[in-house]
Image 1: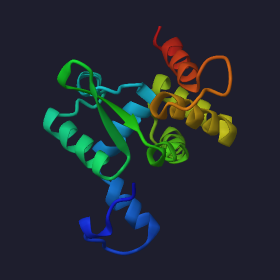
Image 2: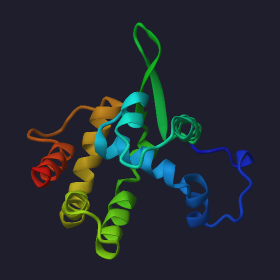
Image 3: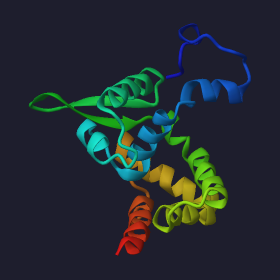
Image 4: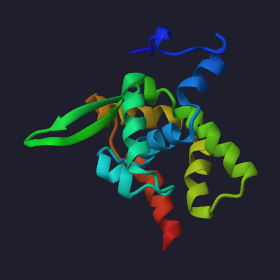
Length: 167
């Protein structure tokens, strides 16, 4: 679902500007990153496992904003009135190449830790074929699509590389 243009005062109709207006604050990217790459789909997981220590009010605000923009959906957990699982939409899944490019640029120019850089390097080196596999895995996990291949998911491969550097 696209964001209603009437909901946002646009500075221009430039596609880069429109994307920045929607995703331009750091917390929106971090929340999407944690759901996409970290497998965190519940509010408590997002709050307690945030490397950047997001505040609860900011997390709640960003989740609401991302749902309104059509990047996330929220489904209640049966038997728990306030518990929910957040899922990426197709619109959010299509951001994978953008996240890969952000990670590649940051790895090249900003000296991240080795354990965080390894995932960015694997994604960059894997190219569009790996990104498409990752998008398919996300569609299975978040949209209920059938998995089209056997073996580990891209997220499992990235997690293994990350964990290997933690030891």
